[in-house]
Image (cartoon, rainbow over all chains, first blue to last red; front, side, top):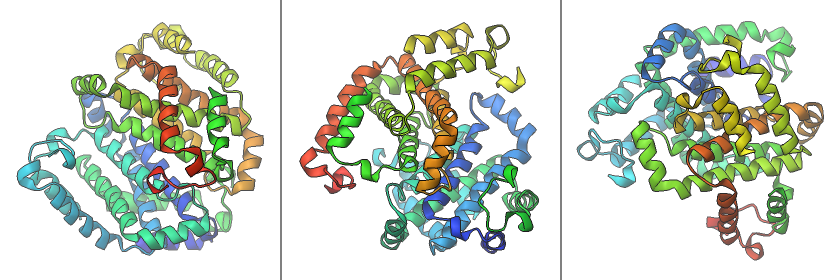
Length: 109
Length: 109
Length: 109
Length: 109
């Protein structure tokens, strides 16, 4: 996937515009488009909206993923490795026996 | 990766708290933590910051990826498929011959 | 209020760091701190949280207001005038007779 | 101003849709629209964009202000008081003699 993203960018010669700050803004703006789908909706309305707009929401999630991959590439971060390392950290922050069934922050467990 | 994310959540019995709206808020908040790394920094300062904080930034990107995967799972979206479909759409919105070397929005190409 | 904000900034000689882009990032990050207060909470939990943390939430809203005022100043925007003008536009987008009791977007009224 | 905002909302009978969480999402989404104006632009391009789009940006800032005022009202927060109190706190976190001319976070002063 990362190769597809980098190829897409480099085909268009866009790297010249891509500072990390602007890439991170893109990531944020796409995440806000995901969030916009669920605004003003209670649980039932969210479920109905998902049925009606699954492809649109998938497009927005794909955009978020696009910027995650491009940022990882440009910052020389191995995202698969980072992902497994972070999940290991979360595992320590939220041990199953303490966190099970509770929605508290790890600082309050 | 998606299986790891769902396993992590289900081990903790957290699905009961997970409305799409709250998952999307999580996605947004993690994206804002990525962005925070680059605030107030010019290009040189961003580059120095990346060298100094690569693991921390990788953690934040991993968190964003975590919520993309969990949202995709809960919304019954195949994110790989969505990703390829969206890249195809972007390819049409930004054809190489028009978009090359330009940072204009597709509506202005 | 605007004078207090500008005074605070200029006392510290911070204008040199203040590009519009970075000010807008600050605005966004403070708005995300407001949002964080309400994440994972149902309506009752939100009400209880507000009682418990009213001062903290007020601090975050004040931070958002701070950046609205500083951005307005630096961009040479009269925010009171912009506010009244925008409310007039919203009045036309959402006429009372059409919008009353409905949570639809103006494009769907 | 707060009265105008509340009047606008109550004329439309919209309070029934207004949970604090959704109001905070609105605040966030409007802040992201402000930020979008400055994305992909260097300092000169930002200045030119401000000249060209001052009214549009003013509209977005007015929207952010709208949600700050409505949230303050619904949460029973006196925003003027909160603003002065928070500026006092910032004054202690960033004393002029230490912070002058430096863009460090208060924890690093």
